Image 1: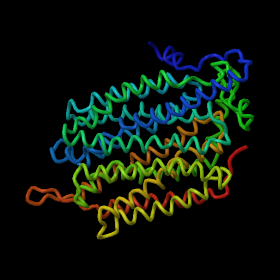
Image 2: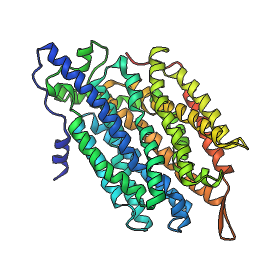
Image 3: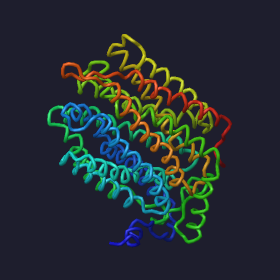
Image 4: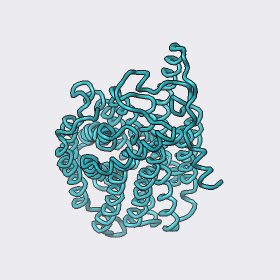
Length: 452
């Protein structure tokens, strides 16, 4: 199958004659909107487990002398570089795609890559596979935002985006609690193999649950059905030309670049905790793998509520303005980080409480700075592309974080009587400082309003 044939397979279907029966239209819309929201939320959540396996197996890999902290930093950075490029290019493609096929393909190939992990300890193989995994994980977010653009209108975007954004919390919770337990009792390879098996079935579920855009089913656009402002994506020749123009416009918008920088900094903190938090709790706070996974799991579970709350609060109380809620969330997120890393006598309850606040607020910031805010102000025909563009900032920053964190943690490691001792003092300043910079960049956007 050549590239042209593959792209045709993913191409959105033809617009069908409009169904004239209003009751049938309403019934199909209601049914498919629920299915779409479930598919992108649960699908993305379960698929997320296929990119977090490395985060929970770092200690056994280091202790088993399979890889050093610096090598794990290089491997970990590969997925972010792959994801940044994949999210950008796949975001452009997603604006034209039949999302059910597009999304399912990415999840399936990511699952297969996870099943291949663990069969060798060659560094270059791990870097290659984990980088490819990032590329195919880059199908997820564009598929979600384009689905939301097709099936949910502008004045309800914030709350439905918030629900969809809980996906990463679901995936992180499954990884840090369930997959961590499997790793503890069955071996580090199950950090990859268990998500791989799970996501083969997830890909099938996405394919049979999600639908192409409404017009391919004979339905009116979401704008017409809800009588809402904005535009929807078309597959006609004229629509394709307009979509391309809209995608180019986002490159000329300074506000999009500023959002990208704010997102980049918060993603540094996000993936510092995701990638190295379990190791930090094991080595700096003395917890076991199961205990550390449970504490990190609190952060991810709280994040589900934080994403949903952000959408509702910004839609209902601030009339879809995101900056005020960004500020509130950022201040609490930074305060929680100070407790996690700098409170000297933190007990388990205090740490879990701090991680809950951190997870709640971080997820809202990720939902906003990582996509929602940019989608608000970008042309609606470029929803997938703008998500991909912000993704370049976010995941290149996450990759740089992984590399720097690996170096800082490695340089702070000493071996005394055959026992490794870690010094996290320098690296946690880097992690918290990233959140502070994100707050500064986001504050520059205080006056930015959603597009009409």
